[in-house]
Length: 306
Ligand SMILES: NC(=O)c1ccc[n+]([C@@H]2O[C@H](COP(=O)([O-])OP(=O)(O)OC[C@H]3O[C@@H](n4cnc5c(N)ncnc54)[C@H](OP(=O)(O)O)[C@@H]3O)[C@@H](O)[C@H]2O)c1
Image 1 (cartoon, rainbow, N blue to C red):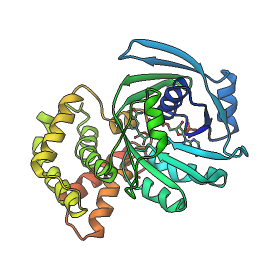
Image 2: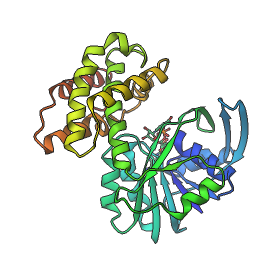
Image 3: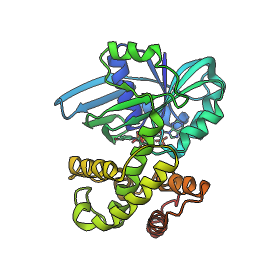
Image 4: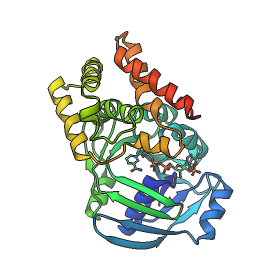
């Protein structure tokens, strides 16, 4: 049995993918109210895969954190700011050999959960799929992306990965997942906050913020290098350019969150970058200014600053 903590867009996507591949899954919902609402719809999920023009309907089982069933494998699919608390709510249920896979964007919550679960093998992942929910029981898989999984302690790939792949699930092992997450963080820090401040699509940044992105890239490259992540300024610029061009028409996740009045993951992107720079006394004035401007923006929109 695979337990999935957080039945949002990514949690439901993985629940559907795993169940359709033949693995039994259980969603863990936050509280009795959420469980009752899920059961009122008989656990039905309507999944629309837009790129495959496919629509499927499936039933997913759900339970509460208080359920006594032991957990042998846990996927954590909450937002980054909710992950530590969510894991704490089920920690007592983890079997001694339980493995945990974290699918959060940004950085910081992964390390905190690894510290919370020192005796367990905890994997980190980078996910680039696009999924959203028109309602709690509907999921739109708007873009197929890549899922990279790795062990921050650089252990070998686990057997379950081969099993998942053999069942048709597309996900890949990466021997240096920390480098993957740091590079993704750099791209997110350079793109997401500016799309919010300028209220523009990713593609519009090329015209509206080219100079500012260059300044940010320079600081981010220094930061990554200081943390032992090998990336040249040219490669970082190229990656940024590729992401912007490939997602030109998209609204960044941070901009979407703010438009919907939802809490952002700023503290696990810019916040993490600044705390990391502070650890090494690295001067990052452009990143700091961006963070302050974004927090001012969040405050004027009545949203949490972290
Ligand atoms: N969506 C995407 O396209 C996408 C793509 C790449 C990466 N990601 C990353 O994936 C992560 C998840 O994003 P998402 O879009 O799936 O978020 P989401 O739709 O907001 O889902 C998060 C889910 O976690 C649940 N949750 C929060 N605290 C909980 C707790 N203590 N116990 C149980 N459930 C809890 C929430 O339930 P409530 O409704 O009860 O709050 C919600 O259903 C984020 O880090 C995001 O950046 C998302």
